[in-house]
Structure formats: C-alpha cells, structure tokens
Image: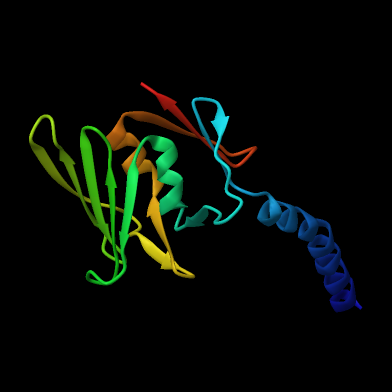
Amino acid sequence: MKKRGFVAAFLAVILVLAPLSVYAEQTPLAVTVDGVGIDFSANKPIITEGRILLPLGAFTRLSFITQWHPNVYMGMAMLRSRELQIITIVDNPGIVISNNTAGINRFVITDVPPLLIDGVPMLPLRIIAEAVGFDVNWDCDTRTVILTTN
C-alpha cells in the first residue's frame, strides 16, 4: 500500500514539473546588439556546455566580414573587421585573435570549440564579442544575450 502511494506521489510531481521543462526548452535564444535583435530565421544559436554558439553569418551584425573555408583542416572560419582578424578551426578550442592596428596576436583557448552543425559553422559568442569590445550580459528570464558597445 505504501508503495502505491509513493508511486502516485512520484508521478504527480513529474506531471507538475514536466510542463516547466518543456517550456524552458521551447523558449528560443535571443541576441541583441545595442538593443536591436538579431534575426535567426535560418540558423538558430545553441547552448553547448553552458556557452552560446552563433552561426557564422550572425557575426556580420558585429561588423565582421565572415569567410568559411570548409576544405582547410576540418573547416576554418575567419572573421575580419577594420582592426581585428579572428581565425577559428572547427572542433579546435584555440582561437587566434589579431589586432591589425596594434600588431598584437593572441591565442585563446575556449571552453567550447567552434562546431560544425548540419553544415553550419557555429562559433562561441562571448570570446569573439569581447574581442571586438562588446560588454556581454545574459538575461536568464528571457534567454537573451545582451551585447552593448563599450
């Protein structure tokens, strides 16, 4: 008899909590740049190991010219702005950040390497946004990354 009561209570808890987890999974990630949202109609950002990865094309909103070289290594993405060049290789946690104006090169190891998902290069947002000079914040209630120009 006690066993049935325990099973019934356990099932009741699962039924109450299940809709909450479904809602959290369905809430899409959003990214704003100085208050303006980025449209992710084609390829959506993802969370991997607690890090947000954006499709390569989204970095054009951060004033980068993007290039994808699928035949170099396992795939190399290059991002260029007036002052910076960033080179990443898929599945490699090392990112090269070069400041063309100051002549400074840095090699940075990321927590989560760039990934290739369904043929789309996905790059870690925070390290690249901070290299350009953005402040990066996270609103967990709305699942929004907020990028603000310094």
